[in-house]
Image (spheres, rainbow, N blue to C red):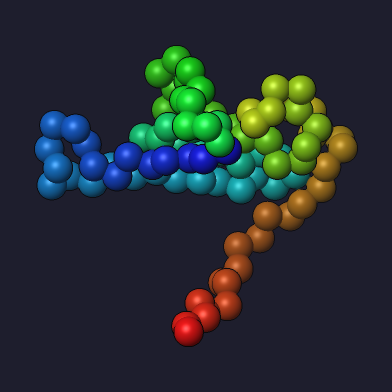
Length: 90
């Protein structure tokens, strides 16, 4: 699955839109903003105009890659933010 965030609005290239991913405690990854989701072959999922939705991260959804609430009472993760180590340079 590929997620492409459209960082530039179509009408005015000087205005940057914002896409946000929220890692919910004991739940999905919520994506909000201007985005497209496609499969490995480049075929877009029909999101029907949604500007927010949940992506499964527990593996229990019957509607993957989207969340259907299957994680409830079956998945625990605190979702506390942390800094990644510095990128390696060659």
